Each structure stands twice: as structure tokens, then as C-alpha cells.
Length: 446
Image 1 (tube, helix red, strand yellow):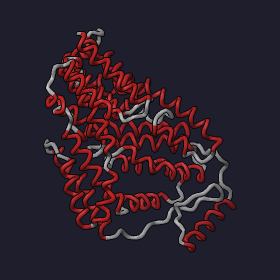
Image 2 (cartoon, rainbow, N blue to C red):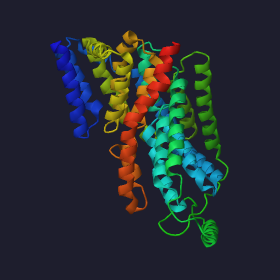
Image 3 (spheres, one colour):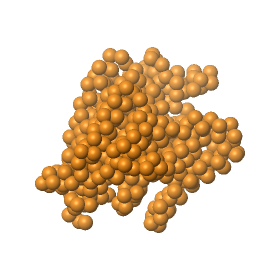
Image 4 (cartoon, rainbow, N blue to C red):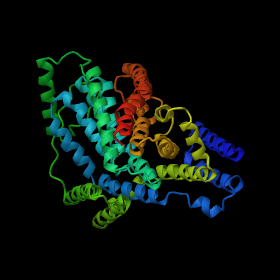
């Protein structure tokens, strides 16, 4: 027991120290895992190193490289501009459009990649009289939904960890749950913040908007550019995609279609290998884009997840994970234990790395699933989504970005206050709602 407590104490201390010093937690976790494995768990160094999740590394690198090529050759920008052009002047649709666009970007390997939409989204909200809270929550929900795609970081970690533990969890089911929950959150955001925060436009305002759009078109300036004064022009429809962009769109559709087809067939698609293969083809056609894509590989997430999972492997070898699981089961009610685990994931993730929470907490659910009668797919989905929907908290990277990109500086204190309330409310609402809608039905019908 003393060895288990020492190892757990080191794990918590390393996590807290790295977060406080703003250092990649995985960088510090890996050598700490080796030290604990050698001197506390009496493991051979090669056995500790073997805990490093190479399969997840292949997934992350392959997927982020492929979508990095799509960014570098302009395909992603073309898709964004085409989508916004379809919205036109229908202001009420902009938050929904940015939800979809941000979800799409988030699904391309790195969830935080969707933050590139923040400046544009908050600027359009300011120009169109849309409440910045509605726009921020819509984009935040998009980040959360897309992050659990089979091609994105949270989905890869959550599904990969469950699969390694022998828990049956369809990556499409996980993605579907995340999308459904976040669509509901966007609907709630529309209900709460859907009213315009500025006076309705006058005919003169509309005329000025049309005139500005015409002037921008004649000058060749991008109609997506906005400033602090004057009416916003409607997004212009881009031209036809270039041949390399067309090829990239076909490759993206092929990747998604292959993943869906294999999953429906009951097979396990190796998304990382597919990403490498498609990325290699595109790089051979466009070497310049292939070189630029190297900088988009999410090495930070690879190191973060790798270090934490390696340490969790050492904890598992020592029996710490089983010990914590037994303690959770002995709370008297497995359902209460599951609820508390979801709440812990949400609370810690509101202030720390969601990626780190998923890598650390998903293994802790395994004993509860084995001994407590909790359906594994339901609990893993609940933990994952609960840890993600709180990310709009201004104490996290996502929420802080939305506050910083709010155009009207007078609105920023309100944004900080409202995002804090929303994020912390999700710590309570999320676990309760997902327990009632996923875990309880799963227990009844399993």
C-alpha cells in the first residue's frame, strides 16, 4: 500500500507542478514514470518505456499531418469561405454556421486548431449585432463536438484507451454522443443569448452595407475582412477550387468514408495509417504543402498523452488503478461513483488540460466498469464529454481566447463573468445530465 500511495502522490505532484509552471505535463511525466517504475514498482526500464502508446502516436501524427497538408494548400480556407458565402446576410445562422465550421476544423486532428475561427467569428458577431456569448458558445460547442471525431485528439485518446482495455466502444458512437450533447448546448445558447444586443438595423444601415460590399468587391479586398467601424460586407463566394484542392477534398471525403464504412462493418480502421498514406500522396503532388504540413503535426499533444499514459501504465502495474477503482465501488453505489468521476473530470478540466484529464481518468473508470455493473461505453462517453463541455471556461485556453477576441472591450468583463458561470454550471449539469441519459439507461437495458 505504501508503494501505491507514493506512486500516486508523485503522479499528482508532477501533474500539479507542471500545470503551475506551464510546462508540457507529458515531458515531466515520462522521466517521473521511469523513476517510479525503477525505484518503486521494481520494473525494468524497457518495460516502463513499453507503456508509451505508440499506436496513439501514429494516429495523432498521421491525422494531423494529413490535415496539415489540407491547411497548407488552401483547401480548408476554401471550404470555410464557401460555407460562409452560403450563409449570406442571414445573421441568425452565423452562430450555427460557425458551430459547424469549428467542429469541422476541430475534427481535423487537433481540437484547438478550431480556435483559428475565433477572431473571424467574434468580429462577425460584433458587426452583425450578434451577442458575443452566443458566438463564443457556438464555437466552443463546435470545438467539443469535433474533438471526439475518430480523426481528432479527444476521440483518438478516449476510444484508444477504451479499446486497449478491452471495452467495446464504437468511435462513431462516441462522436455521435458528443455531437448530440453539443447541439443541445447550442440550442440552449440560442434560447439564452439569441436576441440581438444592438438596435435593429435601419434601411440606411442596410444601404450602407450594400455600398460597402460593392466597394470592397471593386477594390479586390477580401469581403471577410472586418474592422471596428462601418457595416460588414457579406462574405463573397470563392472561385472554383484548384486541382490540388479538388484532390484534397476527395481525399478528405475518402478518409471519412473509409472510417465510417469500416466501423459499420465491425472492423477497426487504422486512421493514423490512412492519414499517413493520404498525406504522402498529397505531399508527392504538392511538395511545398507537404513541407509546410510538418509544422502542423501536434507534437505537444503526442508528448502530453505519451507521458501521462506511460505513468498510468506504471500505476496500473503497481495496482494503483485497481485500488482506486475498488474504493470507488465501495462508495456504496456504483452509480454515485460514476457521477463523481464525471464531476471530477469536468471540474479539473475546467482549469487544466482536457487532453491530460482524458488520458488520466479514463483508465480509472475500468475497475468501476468491471466490478460495478456500469456499462463501459456509457461511462467512457460521459467522462469524455463532461471533460470537454467545460472548456469555454475563461480559465482554459478556449475560453480565454474567446474573451480576448471579443471586439468590444466593454463586453469583455461580461464575457469573462458569463463564461465562468456557464463553464462552472457545466461541472454540475453535464455529469447529472449524462448520467441520467447515458449511464442509467445503459444499466437498465444492458
